[in-house]
Image 1 (tube, one colour):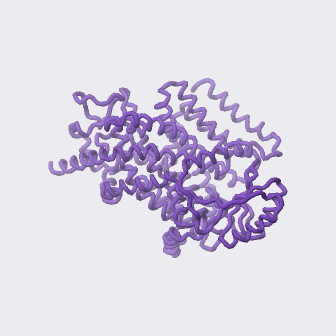
Image 2 (cartoon, helix red, strand yellow; image 1 turned 90 degrees about the vertical axis):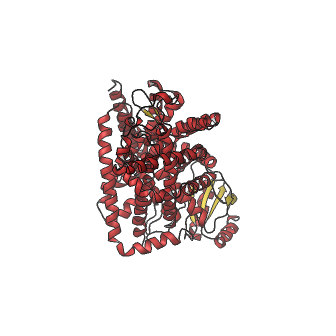
Image 3 (cartoon, rainbow, N blue to C red; image 1 turned 30 degrees about the vertical axis):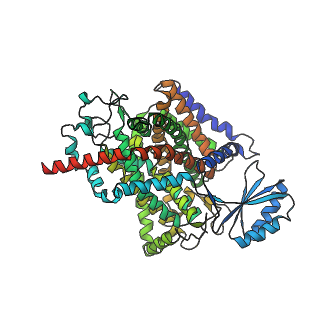
Length: 613
């Protein structure tokens, strides 16, 4: 370990004590960081989620501009008495957000607002149908149809590939047409060798690594947010997104192996950066390919800071604080600094033993989480049919939340993509390291990932929360921002805390286990995403120690920012960063899908020939 690592870690551990002694009159460091970060999030979210506006069917979001704190207090008093939901005012802002249930109430409140002193204006906020979601849906549907429902038809074959049924094919003499790139300059046709010996992991290891990296807070906190805002119907669209995402994942991971680079030392470099650059160059769009590769790499670095980092620290700190009743205006900063030290010891200090232990423990925690879900499901087995009925019917006629078909569909897709990353291309970075000479074989393995992550595990979490609310403990829709109000409680509950309470209703002691699981999920996901981000950083700035260190320090800084910021701001920023990857990645996939078809035919032909021999 570097000599300076230990003093740095000790300094960061001592720093929280001094921070706790600060003047918290204005809310502490957490509030200060959050007030700085939220406007940035709002701007970036408005860019990525740009699209046509449409009026919502049921809920109406209203923004009211007031001139004084006194006016805001008067407005709050009236709104609460009227039965609408007062969502509050952001620090330093003169805008107050309201959630109104129907048009009649909107007309009544609009008339009364004019009589409140200090109210300057008010307007209805229409919902947006983001172009990125349209691109994601249309692309996934196209790939599903073009490849003949590969997500369903080839599902059994995918399982057989993971089981190793076709491993013998990989040991056959090299088929020149099945080769993958060995160097950045491309293959020399006269020097192609058995590339199945290159790569770092088997098909099963690649799938296990990818699943353990995606099964985590997206399944725990993300699903809770989807249900809280969109009701049970959001689950239906998450499932649809997961099924369609299987086809997209097949395409991008096949290309990831096809166009990967393998250095002379055996190190694998793969992902959308490489198939965008090299694949589009092969088709005569070299300039476009380079531009898309650079854009993807930049956005992937941002996504590593957001979804791969800030969400993890935010929800891990929230669960720890709730479980052990930690309070204070700087608890997020303090916990974030401690978490940053632990992550920094691994990604900067290079202590591989911690990472190797985590790789063993996280799958175990994922298994424990799934078992806990099954316990809750079997405890409510008589209610399962009613729960699935709610999931289906409310997907088209949601009771609350964003309101309308588009609203709940968009929400379901946003949460599903955040969970399984299908269409974002990030998983192709990990799958590129597989040992194979048939790229399509790994594409088939990869399509299992959205099924396991979203269709199975996310649905389990959704059922746990729906069961929890079977007695009407809270109203779906909540504050419209991801939190709900439990009966008899004044404080809102959202994200990981809602999931934790749902488990506690059946397994009282499970929140403590869940706290450990969440900490490990967050830790392992941050380490995995630091690798994704670093690969993209290397693509942009080259492979150098100083360059790598700069990225790692920035990554650690964002752990603290995420821990101190609000759940809504962190998830909005992370959604925007991960979904922004869809733009360059999906454009590349729509150019390169014929290559995937050729690779699939080669793999199927090899299987057929092996059976005939």
